[in-house]
Length: 262
Image (cartoon, helix red, strand yellow):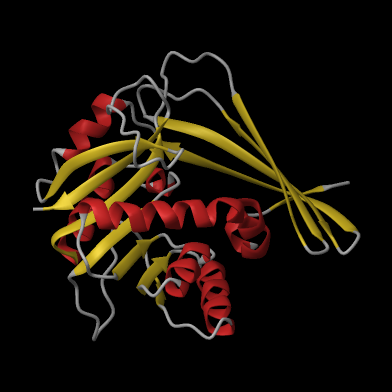
């Protein structure tokens, strides 16, 4: 079976099926973090909202949701699913390092979030710092930004592999992601994702290759110092357990920061 080389963000349904399993747990964490570290407001901004799985879930929970993504296929899919649910969300096409709120939309969000390493698509320190600055400017004083990403072990010698299997109706998606050791000098790591898709009995495989910017704990701390309007409050991991905060160090890979607007 030939492999199609295609950006997996151009097929939002298959992407959504792979990652939808964690949506409720992530939404529970967002609401819990808001109650603990934020305030009573329910205005939410989601940079890189993707297929809109969290935008939809948070709208269902009564949040006033706004979000953007750089891929037009993702934004179209997200808009359609929110509308089909009879809910509202303000969604638009934009990029993390240069986004602007649409005309007529006011800032002062109570919470923003980017949970699953999408932030690492910003390949330069300048772009990463600018993204943090723009998010800080969009938050009200005391509003929080939840940022999740995978830290890199620069001493790792071989590739890593993750595999997920998910199904929705007549569609099954098997996702295999390989990550190669990072280049210390460029701070980039290469990734390859293959989706093996069975859709109504028809099978095909599509492959995406891309690069992430890498961080260890000290590099992430150095970046945060370039966003002085965001105060580091707490750190968790991808178990999304508010009762179990972690130190921001290199003893584990999946960090989830709670940052608060000064």
